[in-house]
Image (cartoon, rainbow, N blue to C red; front, side):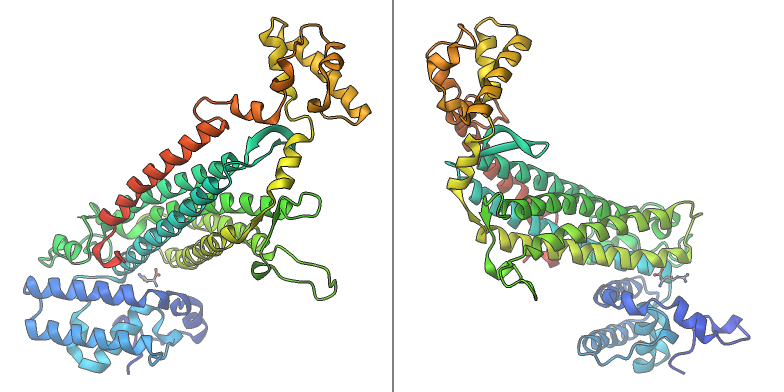
Length: 475
Ligand code: ARG
């Protein structure tokens, strides 16, 4: 009796068992149980306030829902495909516990707006969690950039030594990326933060409901404006998965660099034993599996975004059962993103930076050749010719096994009489770095200011969590 379908009145045949398991979503939407109960309690309080149900009935329903929450937490509620989804499990258990009054909870509501509310509540939490995790990563990057401000490294283009940069400047590049990821999450939050319940099946409900009151109870600043839209779009899920995919892309690039940098060919960094694994056959191996897995998991997060976009494409308004397919993609993105951010942020401060090796590499590969060309250009030689002359100097260094900094003034002047004594200091790594002093450049003073500015900005960004985040999530 407890598993009787709520729509059984119209049906002459029982649901085929194959269809029951095919249409069930309880295996994954059980994740939403806390949100479903929180939403139902708010809905019930509104029904009472509007005198749609009696106070005693509301009290019984709310007490029952709270007990069911405990039961689910303690693993006492059995889940079955016959009851399809989390909403029907909770409702049917409620009726089982408190009798027919339990059936009044669904007054003025449909599973269509109910699931929209559940997912919105879930997503609000997920966005705030992601922002908090990004915040910790940003903080970690700032501390690392401050700590290693003295260290230079070769900046790369095409994975070839290009120009020397500060290691801190390289770290701050990632800081900027994660800052934008955070901004994307914050902007997404504003659109998730609208309360959809009250749309009912699609057209709204004739009951005298008070949607604003439900919104207030659940900490939403406003309600959604259109009932059809409320039950049929999933664009905020797509936005989250898109922002998540971009953040994973950034994590993946950083992971890739750690993988390359920790190779014996680079030796820029050493990964902590506690974040690496060994090989079952090669005793000498220490593998960067955490970084590799983050890189690999980026693929599934991209896939989830594609799945959602494809589910939504060409769906006619309003609700269609296709929409049930949104949840696994969303949940997987949330879990994967949060897991990767957490493990990467734990890993970073434990990475040993081989400062000497980075410094050494900064001097290799003629990283200051552009500076020498700039020097010649500054002394009146057209840049194209300056480029050509410098290229010849580099070629001769390659055959003699020297760096640009090794060359004496006499050796340099063989290539151009324009070169004077001050050129020697011009081609040093230190000079090259510190000459790039405009905003956004790698000069040490500029990077120090960039870190300071970022710290101040981060402090301001934190106000978002303190103010926009609903009170029940402030921790
Ligand atoms: N499990 C469903 C989903 O996730 C809940 C809504 C069902 N609505 C319906 N009309 N069948 O979309």
